[in-house]
Amino acid sequence: MQQTKPLAYFKKSDLFSRLRDAELEELAATAVPKAFPKGAFIIQKDAPGDDLYLIVSGNVKVTLYSEDGRELILAELREGDFFGEMSLLDGKPRSAMVIALEATEALVVRRRDFLAILNRNPAMAVKIIEALCQRLREADEKIESLAMLDVFGRVARVILQMAAKEGVRQGDLTVLTRRITHQEIASMAGTSRETVSRVLSRFQKRGHLSFSGRRLVLPPNFGSQL
Ligand code: CMP
Image (cartoon, rainbow, N blue to C red; front, side):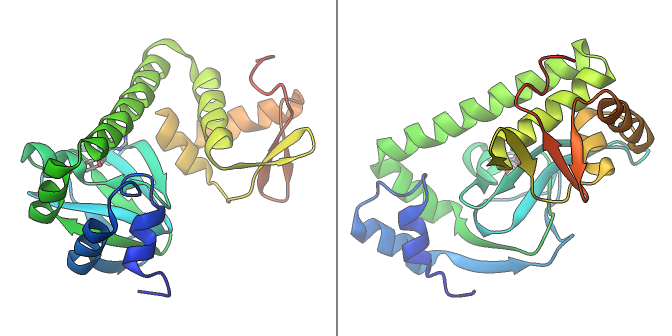
């Protein structure tokens, strides 16, 4: 892996930062750095699995596919986030696919090493429970969106969630600096790419948002006048 040393990285990650130095060293000695190219299938749904991945750099999507190939993106995870904890903790098959959205590097921790440390560190268990609660809240919001909002509301909500996670403030405006495709928004909002294109151009015509090149630019009150 690049310059990032596993020990330094575990130390600055939210999940592991409270471990004592000896435990961080133990973890760093057993973790395996792995690099995935853009588009790599890191985790296959329903496969057995007992590794936990901590993202060092890059970006992944957690996603489900229907039999006819439609995609529903459950979440996008980035540097400092972890995934794979569900099968690791309950021993059941993987709950979703995880695919690299760009070149991604991760530290992979094996079940046995992880559980040994977890058993000695209740504070780390609390961190994992907090992260699971946060994911459950976001999943509840997604269920609410899919069941109760029309497509305008769903697309607006996806944009607001992206802005909250990775938007950059420029004065009053929020700019989504990563290039996000209409297909990606569609897969998060449970609709088609064509519909997202129509909804975005309607938002643009009504002055709800604008584009700088291919980047989305949101006014301070985006969402409130929809
Ligand atoms: P696991 O089931 O082992 O493998 C797939 C992983 O995707 C899962 O662990 C979680 O880490 C992650 N995952 C599954 N569902 C969600 C979700 N709704 N939000 C965020 N991450 C998820």
